[in-house]
Structures are given as structure tokens and as C-alpha cells.
Amino acid sequence: MTDAEWAATFAVNVTGLTKALGKELAMTGVLVNAVAPAVIETPMSATADPAVMASLIPMGRLARFGSLQLLH
Image (tube, rainbow, N blue to C red; front, side, top):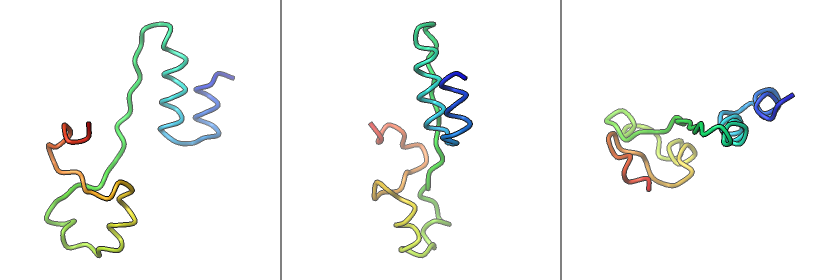
């Protein structure tokens, strides 16, 4: 069983699978990336319960549509 197969079967998360595939394919020059879902600042999210929103936002701030450059 390869690392990628193990990660997909047992870790059951995209991050684990992405890391395992990255390690497996690094020698071939293939880069592996993943895009994780996030809570985005929208008119709809502005009406949500602040306690619920806080539980969904581990970094303490909402992403804004078109603000990927702010993550670096």
C-alpha cells in the first residue's frame, strides 16, 4: 500500500492525501495542491450568528471574495 492509498483510506482527509501524494510524486517533478473550502465574507454570512461564525473560522478572520493575495 502506498502512502497516498494509506492516507486516503485511514486519514480520510484532503490534507493528508495531498501531503502523501506530494511526497510520492516529488521525485517525478509533479506538484500536488489542494483547495480547501472556507467561509467567505458575503451578505449572507453577515447575517449569521457570531458564535457560529467564530466556530467556523480558526484563523479569526473571514476570507473575502477575490482576496487570495491576503493569505500570503
